[in-house]
Length: 352
Image (tube, rainbow, N blue to C red; front, side, top):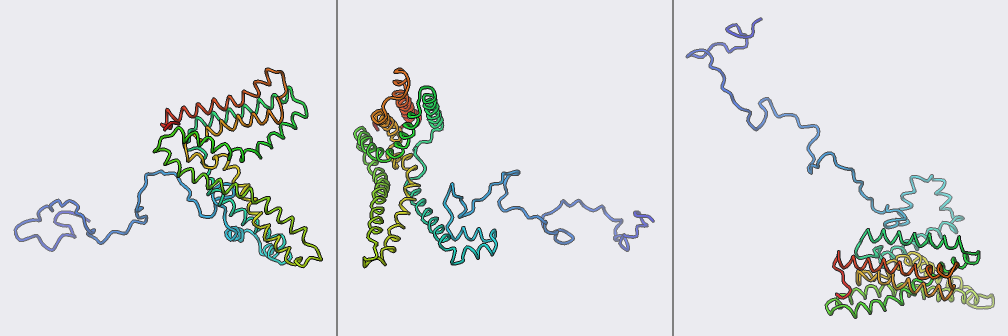
């Protein structure tokens, strides 16, 4: 079978009147619909916002699941909803039975109080204790702190006695208790010195920031003062609850009504004390160099208190003098180095 020439079976019935068939002209492909119908759609349409490939996968955070260490704690409803598919129905039946309410309800109430107190503490004292985040200064501070701890342990191991170890533990606990009130007393003095050095324009801006720090300090001081007051009220109500008293029936409810805010305040102080001490009651917002100045002031005050309360550390006289002066002197050197970096690198001056 032939496919060309005069015997081509696919030619028209006859040639045109004036001669053979002319060669077909070349027509470039034109935009528009295909000659044999519209093309089939592509099985994978293009993304409306194309991205370069490959791109890293970034998981999206889910609301209410920040965990117990970072972010916001989930509410009780979210916790129950998350645990519902993981816990069998029999366990839920046991938990919701009336005989288990004396355990289940206090746990739920305590978690709700802790969550509420933590939210309030994080709003009052954010975890930003430095206005300028200098990683080099942070590393130097960590190295100095670990070196001081190692030298203290070495001093106790070489020259210490059992009573010296006990005294060191007592001084450590004393510092934890004394640090918040000592910081509250020292911060106004340091701020007053900065106000004396600052210019008139800087003072007006610092006053607004001081009000924020004062508000957070008032919350903390009020919580500290309310704890013993509520504890004393509970003790008095417990003593007055006698069978001969006419108010014996209302005393348990009064004790419960007083114990609930006391529990909330204890949770608040537990969550707020660490950030309050680290941030200096939000004094970093007043002046960028204020946390460093407070650290240098507190370390000498702690040294004087330790010397008065516990006396000299163990060892020869030269070792005792180095142990008493070396720690505060090293902290002061780091503080002034930090202030110098703030002035040279970030333009923060004490006499602004």
